[in-house]
Image (cartoon, rainbow, N blue to C red; front, side):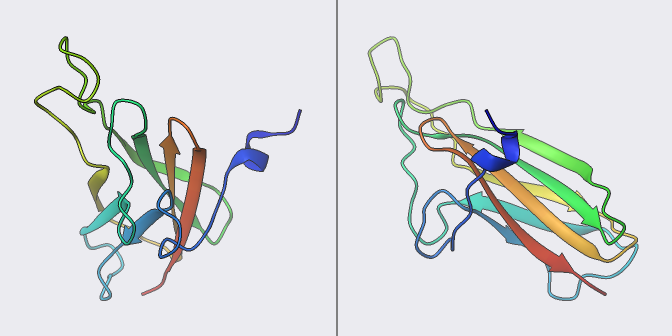
Length: 129
């Protein structure tokens, strides 16, 4: 059995609905708080059903020194479940999360999402000032 990194998938979000998309301001400034939005299903909608859903999204920062910092995690807990049956519920949560971050160094933002059927997916964007 390999390490967990061997199970993490990547792809272009324009052709794969499971890839987390990281959107941060183009004018990101050192030491200034900015909103970073991470979503799954930006170009191709991901199902949000009782049977098939994104369970969570996590955001990390990896400065150039190679360490990694956990910036946050959002869980999506309602996918149409109900006592009436699957997909009969009154509430659904879409896999979109906003993280307010303040970065002091250049590096990479790394997002990881988890689909209950298709596993772990990752993407990253470079951060420079």
